[in-house]
Length: 234
Ligand code: HPA
Image 1 (spheres, protein in one colour):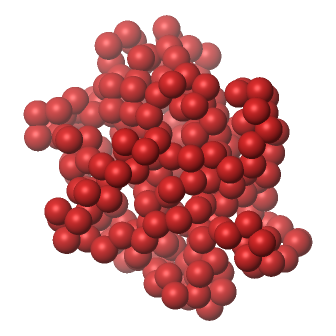
Image 2 (cartoon, protein in one colour):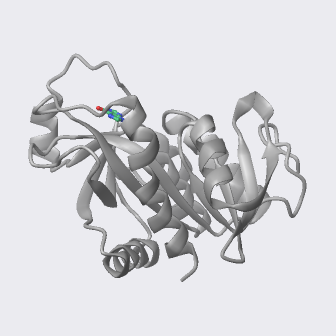
Image 3 (cartoon, helix red, strand yellow):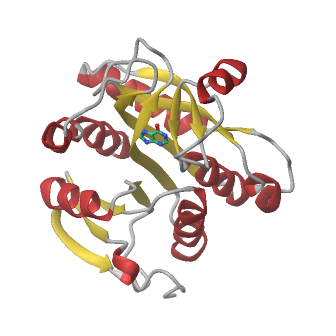
C-alpha cells in the first residue's frame, strides 16, 4: 500500500465499498450522501472518497469502464485494502422490452465472454453468481424502502459497439441487461472469498430504443445509491 493504481493510505478505505463506473458520479454521490467525504484516490482521476453514512464508514470508488478496469480496482481493494463488500452501482441497457428506463435491477448472476474467470479462478465458468448474502440483503432493503426491484442475469459484455446479434445471444443465454463490469468483480470476489453485488439503473432499452436524458439521469440514478447505502447498514 499504496498499490500501482490506488494511492490511499492504509486505513483510508472502508470495508464496504460502492463502485460506480464513472469517477464524476463517485464524486457527486459522495458529496451528496457521505458526511465528511475525503478524496483518498485521484490516480488516473479514478476518484475514491471515504466518509460516513448514518455513522457507518463507506467508500465510494470509481471502477472505470469494462472488466479489465474493474478487475484491477476490485482486486486491489479486496486484496490490499481488506475490503469485504463491494456493490457495483451502474447503468445498464435492457434486453427485456418490458424494462423501462430508470427501473432498478439487482444482479443474480453475470455472463462473461472473456477468459477473466478462467485466469483468476482456474474455472472456465461463463456464468458467475453474485454473493447470495448481498443479493438477498439488497432485495430486502428495496422491499423495506418500497422500491420495486427487477432481478436476473447481467451480460458483462466486453464490446460496446458490437456487430453480432446481441438480442439473439441474450435469448440463448437468458440475459436480461447489458453492462460491462460484473464478470470481473464476481470472479475476484469468488477468488478472494469476498462479497460482491451489482445494482443497475436501466439507462436505455436495447429492444425499444427508449433512452434516458442526461439531466434526468443525475437525479433519478440516486435511488440505487440509497438502496446500496441502506444495504451496507444491515
Ligand atoms: N451495453 C453495455 N453497457 C451498457 C449499455 C449497453 O447497451 N447500456 C448501459 N451500459
